[in-house]
Image 1 (tube, rainbow, N blue to C red):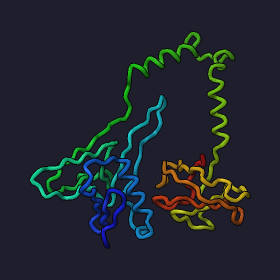
Image 2 (cartoon, one colour; image 1 turned 180 degrees about the vertical axis):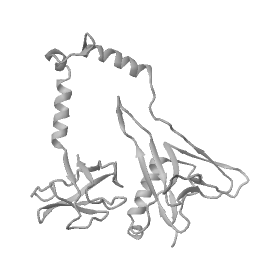
Image 3 (cartoon, helix red, strand yellow; image 1 turned 135 degrees about the vertical axis):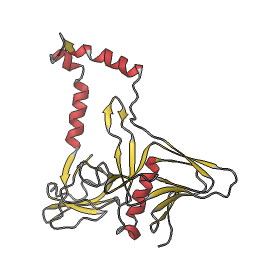
Image 4 (cartoon, rainbow, N blue to C red; image 1 turned 90 degrees about the horizontal axis):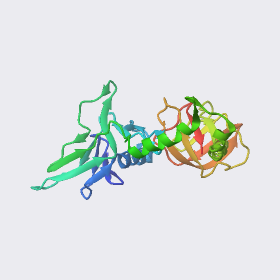
Amino acid sequence: MAIQAFGKFDFDFEVQIMELQSQYTAITLQEIYDTIHDAMADIRNLSQPKIAAASGQDSIGLGLATGLTVRLINGWRVKAADRIGPTVVKINVDGGNLITEDANGPDPNDPLAPAAYVSYSLSKAVSAVETTSAIIASLDTRIPQQLVNGRLDSSMGAVAGAALSAEKLQLSTDLMTKGTVDTTVFMSTVTEFEVFDITDSVADVYRHRLLYFTQEAGGLYRSVTEIQAYSLVNGRGHFTVDAMLYPPTHGDVFLIV
């Protein structure tokens, strides 16, 4: 199979290598994962085995989120393009964690394949959470206001200060729609699928809204795609979306936001 170029990388599916092109000396984990998504969505690669999975970026409040971890599987590794030397070029890979994994768990192989006259700097993030005095100070000023003798104050006065936030939260949740993938009639592809629990009859009512997969056990967990078309077909909602990394499976749950 010929080398395939996507973004900053050249993909070799025969040797399971995605090679960072020679003009680049830095890359982020988000760029790596996004490029893998683009490569797997290409029509030439729809039958190829999975390259990677990702986790992290979970909100923990106060504007903080956990870091991104990309897990390369099925023997895949990232490699920089070979240099002619004698100067060694340093390649920075940051923005989270990059690991290799096989069917038995973590793989001892380095996720970064050796390259001539290249050294790597790979960030490792145990946690992306940073505790700062500003955050602690913020908690100190807010928590006591809602406590009376050590108990949560649920009086009207205490609730009044949060009324606007509660109203905004209610409005946002009212706009969300939950759906569950159903493959009993239509077999999902990376761009089309059907659901049994969304039955709006208005064509394209969800067009250009974002669809976020929330089923933790599913292969598309935390994936986001944009809806391009919607119709009601034989009592089931039929969605057409931007190409995803994998076809959704029966029972996958998502939110339309």
